[in-house]
Length: 201
Ligand SMILES: [Zn+2]
Image (cartoon, rainbow, N blue to C red; front, side):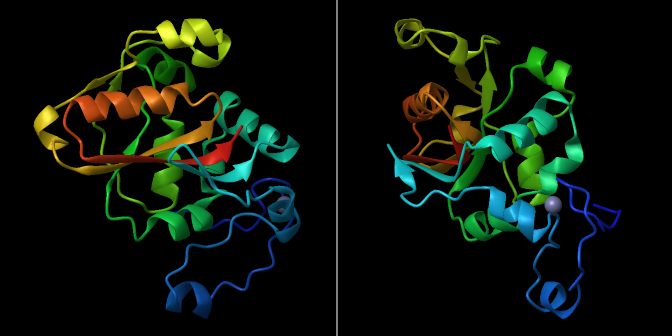
């Protein structure tokens, strides 16, 4: 990112910059939110559910964040979690694969929200999945979700065969999206598929 952030991305209060040796020496990304906003996001203590690690609870602050980021298209907010995502993913050995958006949703949103979170955290990723249905899983009943035949297609099987993969999504709600993506990758020959989400809904 070119421009320097001087105000908290959430509340717009001025950021007290301790910017200097710490960021340069430890190569940390600059902080984008103030301490008081940081405290309002609630970290998850037991982090894993069915092979998926999540970092934050879906509380009111997170709900507002997602609304502004995803539905009001405030792309700058992709940087709110730059440090925490970098810390968690920088030593990852598996191929990092974001859950993709359906092409119609991408047109509406204008940017891929999961990709932007990773870019802001300087985490390299690869796309290996295509979303083939634009239907929103959370609007369906459990029965309907289980009957959905397939949500994803693999772009090129040979690129994931015998590879370890870490799927990335913004939020884990019903788990359906992650399960579908895992299944598609496994069927295409991936060795181990884990998942990581910023939020657990
Ligand atoms: Zn703030």
